[in-house]
Length: 289
Image (cartoon, rainbow, N blue to C red):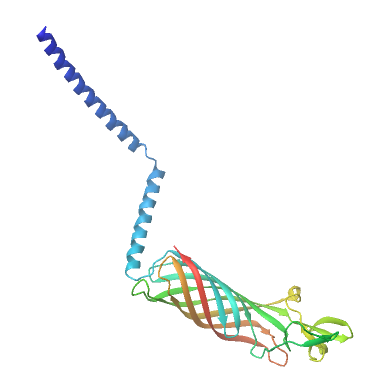
């Protein structure tokens, strides 16, 4: 009886060991099968995640070294020109750590150096009224729609996160001039007013200050705009003072030159022009990735 118990006990231990081995082999086989079933798409996703992590690590290292690094950027700008004002949008793609290709879209309004606003008071029923301000002798309101491509080159990186990055900008492209006729409100009959422009049969009223009571504002001339195609180029320096590479906050200052293939008439008694030169300052706000 004792011999039988010993024999049974030993055989039971052997059976348990064999089961453990079989279970272990089964788990290994299942794991190997799962790994073997990984699709090529899953592998590509893993590679992309790994590549993205490596790029982020590289950008963090460059940021610590004071070198701005990004793959793309977009920014909005508000411009103050020596002859007007404007709005801009910029899209950039990095070619290297120090160089990027930029594309810009601008909408500007250009003022003539001889423009002077006037505001004429009128009286009615013993009260004094002021009409809309107007510019005497202004023939056309001159807008520009510009599309440009160029390069942004890093000149000096930040010494630290609170430093300033300096970029050189060079860009050029096409410019479309938009000439909107300028109207003024005149009164040549008692209790009756009308709007006139320079190129009209009654233009004598347009140039007679005694009849002018105000400007037309934004209500006239949109359906009479004329186009003037041209080219433009600019060079500038940009100072990016934001402490984080993912945000663009900067000031850009430069010189812009434009040439139009048609005469641009802005003011009466002043010659038309085709060539324009101005300086500008632009305040930029945007993001980087």
